[in-house]
Length: 282
Image: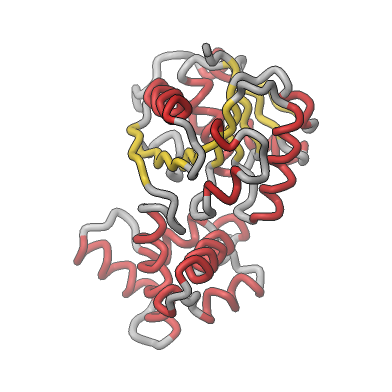
């Protein structure tokens, strides 16, 4: 099966990044989202990102040429002709269920559907479709245009042929695919999110200020970004959702979301996207 046209559902930070990388790799892309405002914001984000990459010499093709391969659409029906689809909507099972069921009824039988979920069971998501053998996880890292890693996660029914096709596609997109088993959080977030959660506990308990905690991790552990600044970049709501998936999946108290993290999300302090998180961005 030759993949020429890739559908991406969800034009948020991850979806727009995936669309950009796919288009940069020569694929035709349909970026679909129910919000026209979000789609226009995604196009502007891609323009800025491509300009920066071109300035740094990381891409040679003109921005306009790359973006000419990206079609935006608010209707799910626009994805009907896609050869491959990546779901990148909000990290919520019910939201993903609605999207996946709609895609399953719309797409040709042979089309593979992947999910960019960062923590939800692939086997569980696959069950919402009639093509569990042609469904798997394709978890990109943020920011997608800069991060090389893609976690590939097989569900219980994912076929070896599907895995091989998805792995080859990830490589064509310039990524380094790494296989992870279908456990809550996979590899990346099972390790990363408890670290972020513990940093929030340290802040809540007054062990150190946000600046102190992040400086310790940057200078003491050589991390490029402190865990609290990273949480702001990811989105505190996303961090909380992933911690809840880990806690529900393992029923282990070590994955209990920090009360301060929950309180900040309830207050609407979601990080960079809301202008305030552990730091102010206004």
